[in-house]
Image: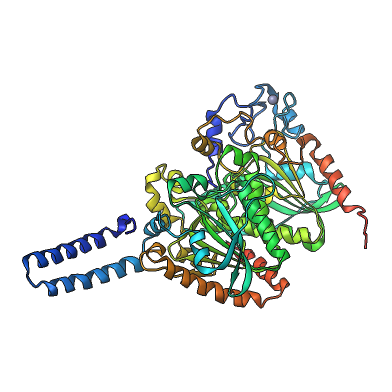
Length: 290
Length: 317
Ligand SMILES: [Zn+2]
């Protein structure tokens, strides 16, 4: 769906909602940090040490892709892939490449996803981490291609594929080519699945539109971080369509769990341990009945 | 007579003038045949140039024409023995998608398509062709059935998008669409998708992971509607015309971007001007395509589908 997603615009207006999260620059700089949920002021270093989770109310601040890799995989095990791919401007959108370049500088990434291979408590995995600080994590050709190649790498090496999603959806500036990345990633995941391999989708805030409606929702296990916004259509679009007030927790991870759309919600503080256990349960054993 | 579109105004005006002259000629009993003939030649030329080089926004209007033929119009004209099959076996029958089995040149096939209504009443029943998750799950069920019985699958795409509603979210609109993309990648039978009207975003793509994708000449396929794009780009939905150009959503655009395999030519002025003729043109495309796809092995079918999507996208290596 939309790129400059309606969710975030709506969100700001919707103060008091329990799904309210900061859309300010990813993490406030400086010595102290105010939690946007419980309003407690913390020493920034304390919050960072706590994996950017509020020590008081467990609000999850958004993470960058590199921060995620650092706290999730085994130390120094990560090797990135396809950092050289560069975005093009197929529809000749004004200032598109400039915006991409500026986000490259800001995030140190070549696009809105970081991909590669590494180990999780000793087990090799292929991984993709989307970064909402890069064009709102939107998916254009490079994002689709990088995820597809990471899946193909997992299939080739016969290892699990894990993704952390964070995206406003398909990238409008690349038009229908963005839409088709939903299909591209899906065909690669199907092949990975047919090989009997594990795919875990971990949805983080926010996961919406075309990303929600493709790879994010078809994990062997669909996991989410607490309070993440996850959904297909934007809240405002739905409100205009149905003309009824939506519940406060609408399209949160908790709402999805309640409606049977998730296997589990896992706190970031437990994420590494629990996912490592899940991976272990899939790569060891399995009875071969002939 | 079918509803006229704004861009057809010059043609309409000229036709009115010709009719007027004809009336005068009869009433005043004067010979104006030379004049009338000249104007009629001009009318033909005007029509030809108007319909041969349609602006993207004009195509959008044709694609949205209330009398534009729908999935059921084509099914009735192209296939024999169609039997509609209903329901997702879990929640309900979503009439925004129709599906069933039929015979095509003697070969059993499965047909699935978005279904708009032509009257307000039918549109309400069919939710204006905007499916809920159960619509996509019905489609998936019918595709799985097609695979079991080794029938090719033909999908007609014609939706503004998947329905953005509370219940749709509760029942997993995202998952329903995603599941179809994923499963369509692996079906061991030929899949052909044809965009016949509007192909709106993920809700369209959920019937669109195919071996071959065609678009009718005046259909559109987009990640976001021109109005939606305009309100984001210019903060004003009334710039939809400009957005329709900028977003590259027409059949020639998509052919050029390497997304679709072919364009099915339309009757001059749009498929609604002669539905029988349009159906028969479409049938020829399906015949030719199936001849090719029927000859492939299961492995080839799946590999061809894989390669097709793997190749879509533009980036610098
Ligand atoms: Zn807090």
